[in-house]
Length: 210
Image 1 (tube, rainbow, N blue to C red):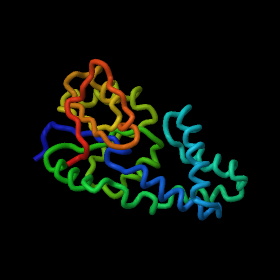
Image 2: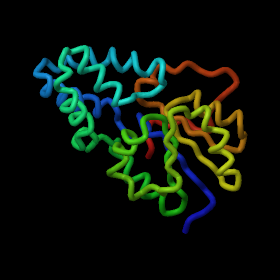
Image 3: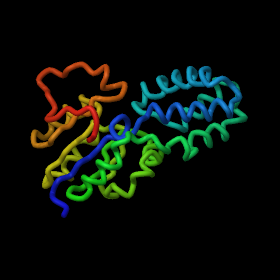
């Protein structure tokens, strides 16, 4: 029986092992470009930084365009795009406990998403677990901090749980509403280098979803 509880999960490094996705992606891009995987990954990482610094998120359209330019293979731009959207890139990348935990939670609370990124790309990651999520509670935005006030207004009559690997996002949510239950999942590259935030401690800290 569903209750008034709502759990919203971030995607990358919370539900989904993004590093595995990138490994799959660079392998396919290397094949398209007929170059060593290490070389393609080095170029890709630089493009990723160049894109995410101004935008704040990964944009696959810009990435494909830049990769084609920087490898002088503009003629293969369509093939690069097809490699990025290859469904095999997104398969098998959820953390091993993700599906079991979401299935258990969905029996008694509303399970949704609050994630940053390119909408189509983020939804492609969710394909394997989409049946465990409430469609009306999937929130994907290019700026989570700007979206937070409106999001929280939607859940004023619910007990809201936010699960994220980004400590600063949980901090922002708590500043807006002290009643939110914040859960910091300490895995992934960002959590590993996260410095403490003065005056803030999440309600719970976990190493995995289980």
